[in-house]
Amino acid sequence: GAVNIDFFNTSKFMDALQKYDKEKAIYLYCRSGNRSGNAARKLENIGFKEIYDLQGGFMNWR
Image 1 (cartoon, one colour):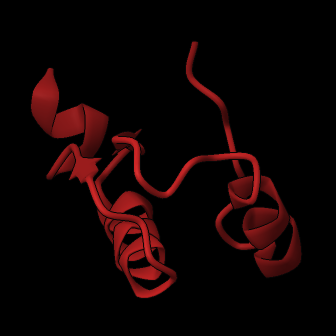
Image 2 (image 1 turned 135 degrees about the horizontal axis):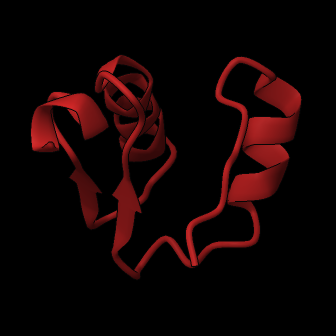
């Protein structure tokens, strides 16, 4: 059920986030953890309350 949102396309990224409830948990991951970490900070800045980021990304998890 994961959804791929292009972090580097700011307008599409912000538009995509409008579909999600800021009061519900959101889980982020990417290959190395850099993009998802940046995305987590952006989500926090716009009011998301419960953000989970896979630190080190998918490569670290394996």
